Length: 374
Image 1 (cartoon, rainbow, N blue to C red):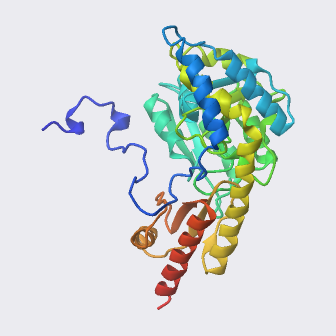
Image 2: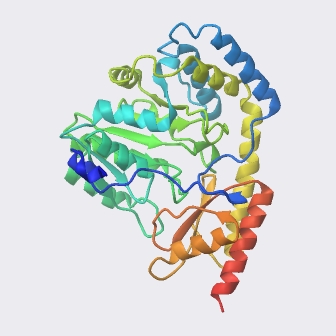
Image 3: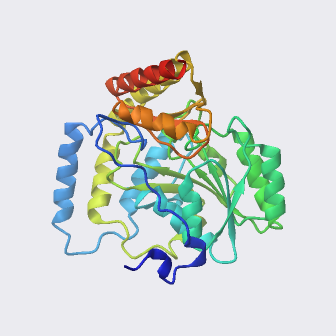
């Protein structure tokens, strides 16, 4: 039987594991940061209408530039951030992962490097390696915030071509302040001798933050990008629709590497229908933010350490000893609750669910903490 190591694999991919969280059939699944609320029936009907309309033209290729969708996304961003965005400064793809991939295909690649501040979203490193871009793991403080001075020093020393800033950060939930992003952006430009490096602010969980979006920082910064997704706030993980906002020149550059007609007519129609129901969907976000804050309070009351969260999930611990967090993960699983072990020593991550799901999770944690005290 042929093994993967027997294949002529690229060296930077040897020994690596594919991205993925366990998909287990348990009563309470809180491990993949999904929005737990199904789409409302009114929206489901509107999706059916739009898709039916699109289906009549499936013998033709879709709008390869997705202008109608990009215009609607620009309107949404303008509304929720207060920063005016035109469709020429927005690009959409199959999930924010494809957005990141296209950015790295355009601005990264062999002989170039990207930096991220770990622990952070692991796909930044995986997609970097997949595009032949060298990966640099930058520093964080013990409380999981970015050590700005150390990060600036690292950027000056390593001179990366792409800088990733995840805010709110996955898996820790921490937001990055405006001043830190500005410091990293300036350092990235200076380190490349004024030629500029691309700085990508990943706001996949931006709608759940206590603070404001960093999107207004785009003004006057041609190599700053903000990426987002419809998977979380819009409850559309199955849609696979991500997007970015940037200087229109960045959008033009990304189109050099995008595949022809990469967004299907069905995807565009579904996303447009969801955007018509923004108010309803953002109402679910407010419910999740309240439940997220309840999880933080209840976990602390149960004796856990909790990282302050601006996302739709919470990182909690600490579970001491070698593999302590995995033992805790297993104990919660045995109680019917699936959370995420991201490999951060001593910590686990739980997605915010419905009130009933959160209650079940909290009951399991309390039982675990009581057992650990014996």
